[in-house]
Structure formats: C-alpha cells, structure tokens
Image (cartoon, rainbow, N blue to C red; front, side, top):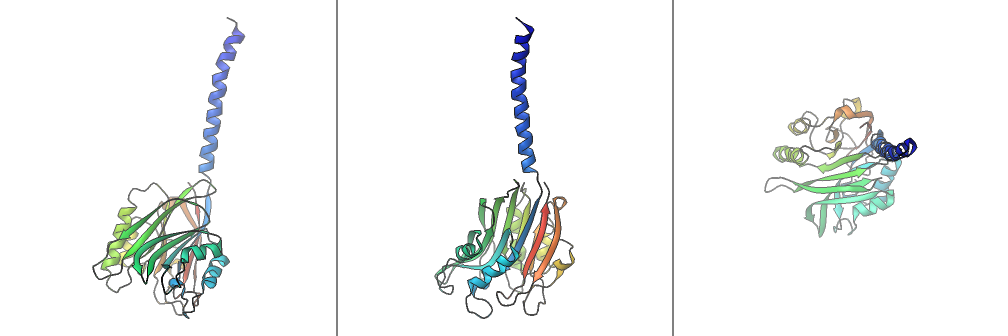
Length: 271
C-alpha cells in the first residue's frame, strides 16, 4: 500500500473534522454577538387617553417616535365594550409594525384585560403567569416572553402590572411569585412594567434580591401621575448584571396618551 494512498485516507477525515470545527465556531460566534436593545414600559390606560377619547393612533405614534425593540404594555383591553370591542394588542401592533402578544389577567366588560408585549422580533416562547392576590383584589398576570434577536441571543422579556392598592400585601405576593416563576432561568431576563411601588418599597426589595435596577440618574425619577409625577411606579429591571450595560434611561411624561410617564431604557447585552 502506497504512502500516498494512506495520506489521502487520513486526509479525508481530517478535512471533515476541520469543517465540523469551522461550523461550530461560526455557530458560537453567531450566538455571542452583543445586542443593543431599546425597551419601553407603557401603561396605555386601555386606549382611552387622559381625555377619554380613545385614540390608538396617538399611543402607536408615541411608540413609533422612540422605535423600541420591545414594549411592555399595561392596562390592555381585549375586545371589551369600553375599548369598542377592539383587540388592542393587535391594533397597536399593526400601527407600529410590531408583533403582539396578549396575556389575560381577568375577564372584564364583555372581553378581557391584562398585559401585552410588542416586539420587533418573533416570539420563540411565552407563558401567562397568573399572580396571586387576595380574594377581593383584581387578578394580575406576568407575561413571560422569549425572543431571539438577529444577533442570535435569546432574551426573556417579562411584562407585568402589579396590584395598585395602598396595602402592599398583594404586591409582595406577586413579586415573590414572579421570582419563583423565573427561578433558575438560563436566559438573560428583563422585568418591565407598572409595579405600583417605589424603588425603596418592600415590593422592589423582593424583586431586587434577584434583579437589578440601574443606578442611572433618570431611573429614580417619578412616573405618576404624568401631569405632575409624585411617585415612581414604573420600572425596568434585569438579571445577570455583569452582562448588561445601560446606555440610557428616560422617563417621558407625555400626559395625553396615558396618566403614567413612559419609561425607556437602551441596554447592551453581551453574552
């Protein structure tokens, strides 16, 4: 048997191995590119606006102005009488050219009421996490979504709206339930929404035991009511703090579309 023949036979599997290694490296590279994401929390007041004139174009216009990749919307109606039987997530998604997903917290006014997420990316997973509440309190939910960005990163985006009553019993239960629901998650995760409590509250202390709120100076601005903000109710939190960098954080008090200020953060995620 010639040496040339032996060399050729050894060379073929080596070529195959090299190709496998090459494609693995390409795959790893594609999954490890940093992502810059702009995320928004927007309590849309069931589309009513503060003038009660039901203006979805204004709500969509605010979103289009800031061009977020992901939006957590609270006080979202699905085919209720007060919302003229519109499917608000779909209507606003159409107006913003974003994909929409809705999670029911309760049945209301002939339809449903809850949370919604708008995304520039398609969803690769979702869960409607029903949150605990006292017997006479409104039901609440956390909409857990996952998207895969064009950089190959899977980001978990959680939209929620916690109880609004002065007594914080429900909010503390709900914050703990969210942590349990996200326990041991392997995904970089953002919790975004109207948490109905301040940054130093018991509710936020529970969430901050596992999640981080940026120290950006604007992150501590008050967010409600929009015409004269006196309390900070709306927040953006993240896990894996070593992998996130907050480039910007804005509190926008557009006091026609909603009674809440809108919160926007621009973050870089580095795998």
